[in-house]
Length: 169
View 1: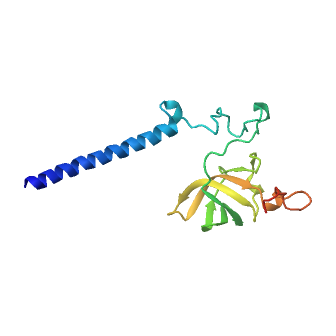
View 2 (view 1 turned 60 degrees about the horizontal axis):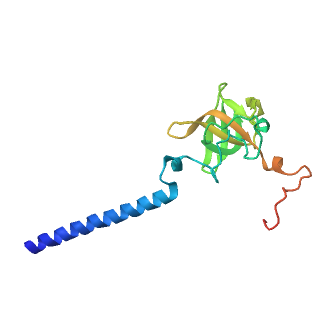
View 3 (view 1 turned 90 degrees about the vertical axis):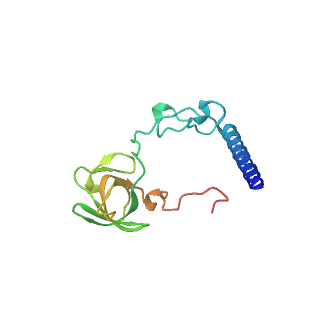
């Protein structure tokens, strides 16, 4: 009985010692990565860059910042328009076909971020949809439709593919 008690005591002490070693290691890694102050916890870019307004490059003056508004979140669905019906888009997505419902309150942005009309939507266009799913995820009610550039729009004016740096096939 005394032997089993001593074994349990030794096992308990060894377990506590193990937890202390793991906690000390984790604390050392944390301090090594973030530092001893709260400044290490702030989100910073590479090289402790100063905070820039959305869309402004580090070496770009504030007066040359693009005028397009920031996207209000991550797109719910990305896809190509297969068919346009009144109040509904049929999209081809990587997850299969999706139905997207829209109405007069749905905003449409072109690829430059300018507000445009629903009449600019055409079959074959790539779009990003921000909205809410209904009917168990079967239909998406769109709040914002962003028209994305097609591959043809990204090509050079001569019809050639965009140039790639040497060594990048």
